Length: 460
Image 1 (tube, rainbow, N blue to C red):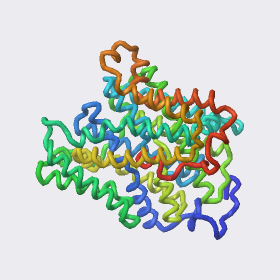
Image 2: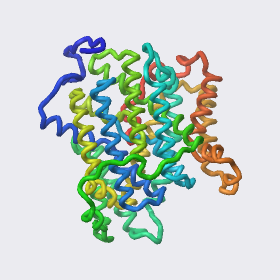
Image 3: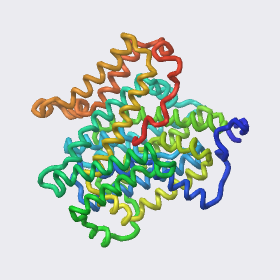
Image 4: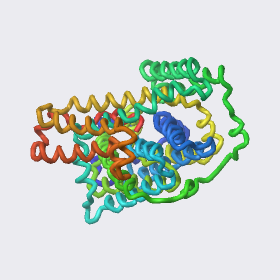
């Protein structure tokens, strides 16, 4: 194999190697199975549309752009630079920031423009020069269970505001009360049942099955308008800057920081997959993988999509199927790009009632939050680490409760930082970890705290 491959042995995790091919029908089937596990694909665009008060057609476009962008980066990771079976999906960190920007009244075009520029700058930093790039240095810091586990908890705590409130709904919207609660509860029950007791394929399709069940119950009491699906064109190509273009310096800096945890998580996934396939990853190859991810994310932002990261759930699927072929993930990327271009498919996703999305999101986000707690169980909890994790959490989440009258008196940069816990948490965690744990990384974590669990970013 290339890049120092040592050849597969009977102990190798994969039955089908990274550079091997399988039949066309099995490749396509496994490609669709990969898509079933990409939960954020079916949740994030609807919530972004809600934050910006977008009409159905534009929310449908967000779905299409998300599929196309994720597919594009997945293709890049399969055939160029990294050349590993890595599936890319929308990242919760930038998704959360986009939602916050919408609540602050920042135009969507400016938000995506700032995200695109942050991706371009990271692409420049990631490209290896003589085998070295800044990415490796940043990732070694951000992979710490103390840092990453705390960040996961902060992100998911912030997203709690889009779950139960939207599940219950408001009096002026159809389904308020019993219909919303019952249909959302059914979706939760189906999701839990499929995830806990379902066979492999059922588990991978748990999100879609739950959304379908909840939507059918909702539709039995409240008519669901599908006229916009019937009258929509079949195919539509993505457009550059469909919501306009702008740039906000504060948003750019915030998005720049939010890329750090995603890059660290993706590098950890590269290492796991390479180990399973008995491939040695050189620093240059890792940097090229990150380069493809952030460059693809920048291109996706110009189309109107959230940035991506390597999905750990899909890495777990590699282990379950024992098929490590990067040609399967290449097919996954191609299918995603095709589905993103089919307007009627995208608008069908828009027709899913928001209470159903919110109810399923409550389960997904809760699972990710508990994964963060699981990661923190790998930390050696002495006084220093209690301060490093506890103080940033309290300050960052406390920002969500600052009165509006106070926020209006702050400059935009300070206002965004206060209302975006991820940013204040990253800064405080970084400063405190450097000051209090410098030179004691091994003593700051338990001996087995070497790697995040595969489910740590289920919907991220």
